[in-house]
Length: 190
Image 1 (spheres, rainbow, N blue to C red):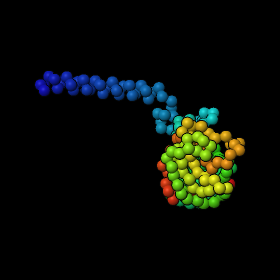
Image 2: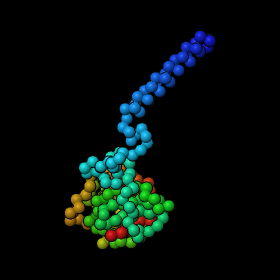
Image 3: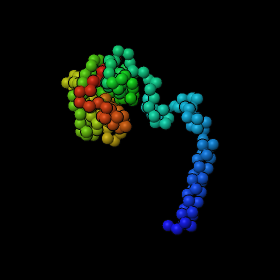
Image 4: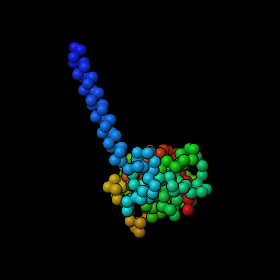
């Protein structure tokens, strides 16, 4: 490359960097204060109606819903029957994720269980194809576990048929599937 060509390339590169810098400055100057200073907004974001209360408006997980007391220690899945909520708790006791679920018509008794089976995709006991099935016990002769409907639907909580599928959204189902491997502790509380 000749000296003249390298001078032109250098000048063009400098001009491009200056333009990018100027555009970045303009973008940061017009952004809301909480994003430019790295601070959260002064009021907490509200989830959209019908959305999981465990997530804020940005889709990030909130950890404001505390794990129920007396729900064990170490890595575990905590399922609160009354709250209709699940927590994925890491070995150091931190909440990795929490989300609401739709309970099955048959509920497991409070206690400690272990993941004893997993299926990637199967037909649900309500006839709906489900995925990310994580089974952990039986109750009233019905297998009980977490799953999500492939079509994203939620079961009818007033169904007359005995089902053991604790239904979650597909996104939450994937997170639980990745977290709750065979033998993972599942703690069910009232």
